[in-house]
Image 1 (cartoon, chains in turn blue, purple):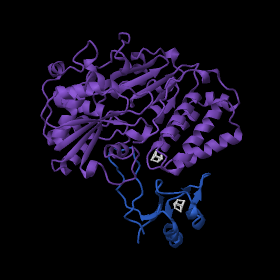
Image 2: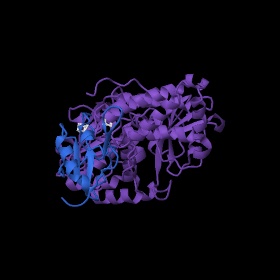
Image 3: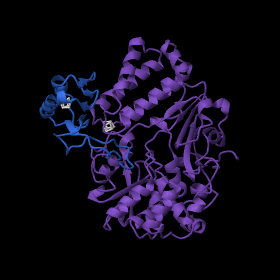
Image 4: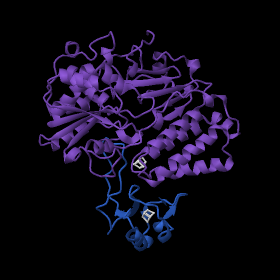
Length: 90
Length: 418
Ligand code: SF4
Ligand code: SF4
């Protein structure tokens, strides 16, 4: 996969097990309740392989890595935030 | 400007608005809920082709009045293009916002203008059915009576949503209409493409639809006679203060200070202003008065009241209203509410203050909807704009105003999402 890859957590699916933070502490930390915080969503090339491993390890498929697609960020007329793209999973 | 007059008890206090258009039918001042009187005032149900309607909407730049401020012409054009005669129109009249009475007032005073808007939108999008959504507990009898008096081409059903803060969010509302819980969906598919039952769905706030009806009845030139050049017309606004709430209709170029005067709020009675409700921003009166009003709620706190206590109450309400689907929101909002309760009592020590700052910093962007982000922005505006008052609380001095009655009373939310 080419282009920058970004890391997202589906907040509804995530159970806060913190496995992702253990496998990828460079990019993911946990808050005081054990829920992941992605400091910078962009995955440096050197961490790509480990990011993919963390994605595969998430027991509820809540952690996703996707190739950044530009120009797809206008959800019409909704207050709901744009949730992570699922189809571009690695 | 005459003094505020009393309206129907459910509709909040009504003042004579600055530019009475939608609310031209207030008590004793026009058609109200009476259909023949409405027709005399506005004329027959307008017939406007989709293309002409989209152009007129674009010309006057009508945006959503339910909080999203999205251009209506774009939503309408998408639904019209996608519709195979099966589109759905959903009129959202569930405010869910403490301190907002404008949609309920509009439905009480001008239901037929909203229903004209539903029919105009339905005709233009090729919709086969429509919903009018209100909050559970709203008086629906008058709406049923208004619907029964009309012989509309597209049938409209009334639907009641649970009284919880996020229930009126677009995806939550559609989920509830489809028989599910009124919780936001984490979906990427736009309702205008695939909404209710997979059909293209136009959701719109009831005021937006009433504005659409006024535009269809009178045309863009009339519509643009008042208001800001780039977004002409009027807006409804609820002004709340210690006396209660008042719904006004003002031109879109009205300044906050002017609206407060029109609402009969004396400048010396203003200590702080919350613009935009629970997800809004706190301001000092002197700063905000000259600014253009771009929101539908203004809450006025007298100088002797406590904005920290008011904020704590709102955040506790938002925390209870959180759908609890997302861990950061389910845990973070009650925690921030607890910190603010301590701050209100002057019992948040330096460590607690640091913890609050950290929590505010970590929460945004980590929920499926904007509730956490909006809450954090509101709390931050308290700490920034009203820092002097907050500073006294930080020094451990509880203020007498904390015990005062809330200007934005928060309702007890329903337990159920169904
Ligand atoms: S591993 Fe998955 S479920 Fe666990 S915290 Fe990370 S994203 Fe959430
Ligand atoms: S962010 Fe909060 S209110 Fe929004 S969907 Fe998640 S839990 Fe519900």
